[in-house]
Image (tube, rainbow, N blue to C red; front, side, top):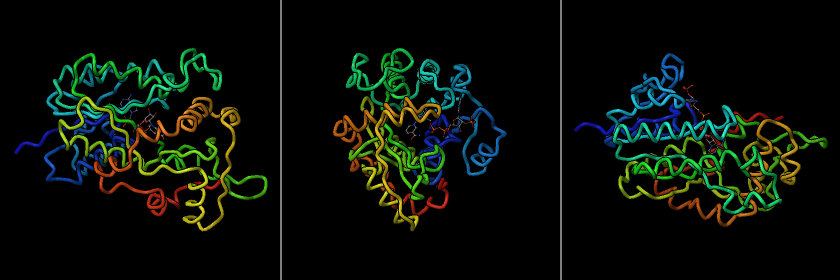
Length: 315
Ligand SMILES: NC(=O)c1ccc[n+]([C@@H]2O[C@H](COP(=O)([O-])OP(=O)(O)OC[C@H]3O[C@@H](n4cnc5c(N)ncnc54)[C@H](OP(=O)(O)O)[C@@H]3O)[C@@H](O)[C@H]2O)c1
């Protein structure tokens, strides 16, 4: 029987890479993978081809290249790359290109990796957090939410996937424990005692694979995924256990976090404040049981740490 092709944006990255692995490790699942990359000759792209993926050139900034890449596929995983450019307009344009290409190709299922529109809870007039780039509270959330209608208005059979904080940020995004003036390692999170839904980045793609496998069950629906909902104190305790050295929780205020000054600190400060202030809404959108039903191998933070603890830079 011919396998149904899932075209995957960001295939060499975190979310898409997880989906590619999930498809390739289930050869009898009825799906084949087409990996989109801007550079088919990169080491990562060559590695995907070696593992059995069909690798095609496409940039989500170039609609014609995405149309070509989606043609003949059954489904697509659509993700945008905010942190490459910090531009909500470019992110929306990338999403629009994928929606238009999905329509052109007549895809039977699209999973769009999106987020909540934080302005539904914190209108621009709400002064608890600054308005950013003129019309956003959390630009990388709000822009994705603004792109949702691109998919619905074209009548695409879409699943809206709400993702969670990658625990991998502790490795790649400078969010690992840092040595404080007292010499102790501190895990900084501006969320007080509130819970942060987190996930191993690769498990997002594995959950998305579960969505594709369930066919029409999730079409037209929004589904959120997370591995665990943990407080900063619980994350620090798990880090202490895994690293074998004490890690304390440093619950700075969102305002202090915004003032850290690294690129995107204001966006992330607002994001964590939103997650803390609307804890039950935000956690409620990311049901752990549903996530596990989509991906039975879903990792807990402790399991993720066991595999990745040596990769976390301790500054
Ligand atoms: N960090 C977090 O905690 C977190 C949590 C949830 C959601 N997110 C969201 O995740 C999104 C990024 O996804 P990710 O983390 O999976 O990305 P990633 O790991 O940074 O990977 C991005 C991959 O996408 C490809 N890419 C970049 N620009 C492209 C373009 N113009 N056209 C085609 N491919 C392009 C690159 O592959 P090639 O070089 O091979 O083309 C790269 O390998 C962001 O929008 C962010 O808001 C992040």
